[in-house]
Structure formats: C-alpha cells, structure tokens
Image 1 (spheres, one colour):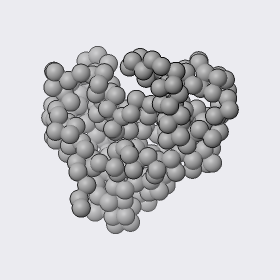
Image 2 (image 1 turned 90 degrees about the vertical axis):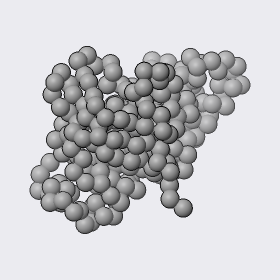
Image 3 (image 1 turned 180 degrees about the vertical axis):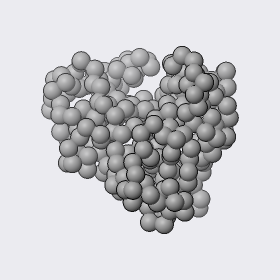
Image 4 (image 1 turned 45 degrees about the vertical axis):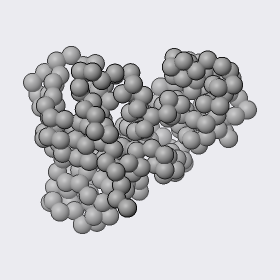
Length: 253
C-alpha cells in the first residue's frame, strides 16, 4: 500500500532580500518516512526546513512563490495559525539549546504553555517524550537536575524530547549530530529509525555517510536547486545526474 503524501511542495522559490535561495522546488514528503536532503553548504537545505514551519517569516526582507501543502492545507494561507503550524511541524537545530532549567522543566516547558497544568499530566508527557527520544533510562533518576549538566548527545536528545512533548506530526532535523561523538550519533540515528513509526522526518544529515545510513528516500540540493530525488538505494548507488554522482563519490563538497 503506497504511503500518503504528508507534505507537497510545488514550484517553491524563496528569496532573501532579492537573492534567490531556493529555485523551483518540487518535492513530496511521505508519511512515516525519513527523507534526507543533502548537499554542500549554502545549497538551500536549511532554508527549505525553515520554510516548512515558516521560521523564515522571522527574517526581514524575504519572499516566496509557489505552494507548500501540509495534509492539503496551504501553510502560507493568511488564515493559518502559526503557533499551531509550528506545533504540527517541529524543528531541532544543529546545536543543542537546553533551557537553563531542570531536565523535567525543559521538556514540560512547551506543554505548560499549551495549557497542560496538572503535575500528573505533565509527568506523563515528559516521560513519554523522553522515552521517544531514547533518553528516559539515562535521566529518569535525575529529572530535577540542570539540563546543562547533560552531555552534548544527551542535550541533543533532550531538545528532541522538548519538540516531541508537543506531539508534532513532522520532525525537521538540521544536522542534529554535527557536534556529537560517534556513540551519541549512533544513538540519535537509532532513535530516528524508531521515531519514523510515529512521525514524518525530514533530515539534513551531518555528512554523506549519515545520509546513506538514515534515508528511506533522499534529495540532492545544489545552489538552491533540487537536482534529483529518489530512493536511498538509487541515489547513493546509481545516481542519474552527474552532479549527484560527483558529490556522493567525494569529487566536490
């Protein structure tokens, strides 16, 4: 049975103060898959991620053309509730940014703002999110200690748990392993494979090896263009475009 399309991007262009950052992007993101978008620096990957939950709105002087649909809803429709959109499409950045609070309060922060008030309700949300981020067993006995005392890999999974506590439908991950050691990286990659059972995941990987390990499907970006897309096996073993082949084989980038 074919997977449903969770997000449909049609003829999407994005401009920063007149400079075009994304060029005519057409891309479908399927439910419960890990779609990896990869390419050299400044190829438009992060811009695409930020466009998907409209974080680009926070930058002055930007504009776009084209359409992004989430379950058929145009996310740039003026009637869209941005707070609700960003709950449905959560983003984890490359550098972990725990709040200067306890581990518990880091994860509970969003649900508290959203109206979850009882201690029992918050405890259930926090435990579920930490379990989903594969962090619960490591921190369950020290939830009231500062999140700043966690290791880098633990902090990154905590930030993931903080997003998961809001029960999003889509996870955007921008190089979530860029500053992590190999063991922490492996933990997060294993976590992602489990999370795709519940979430749709769009990942900008740390390197080409991570891209090939994690992807169900992949898209190669270069200079703001989506050069080609396909199954992970096809993209990384039999790319159709010479530019993709050159990047995958390390001839540039």
